[in-house]
Length: 201
Image (tube, rainbow, N blue to C red; front, top):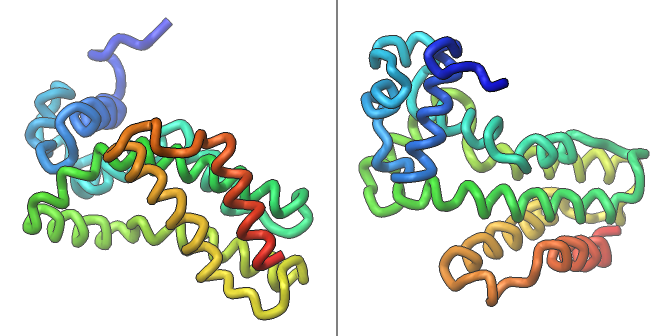
């Protein structure tokens, strides 16, 4: 049975409120004041639990989107955990779905340069940002290279950028042009992994 909203911890109510607002009106239009009001808390209470709005955004992405956890778990894997091409396909699938869910929440920022700058600075303050996923995949591929499971001379950073860049582009096309112009993710992910593996495996 769900816990009544009024008896849930303030930190959870704030996270709920942030998720609701970010999904409905976008990140640029979501303020800490609005989050606090939606959660039934004071704005001062919000800052007792979270450093800034950007921390709430990161928490929503990482804890309230179904593919974030599996994606980060796959990125944290290492040599000996099954065929690497299969692991790359899993990473591509989760990354494609993660970007597709995150993009609408963050897109409104790009229309307001001042807000985008503030968001960038806020994310940097807590040591987060979209580069974290790229860094993690590079690390995974570098461990595979060190274990001799990648072709000598393979560039882990470039390979990570190729895979994640394709996943991000798919999410952009999905939202901008519609589902009919993108390959279904269950076809896209293994095809992308197979093509990348042909170059670095």
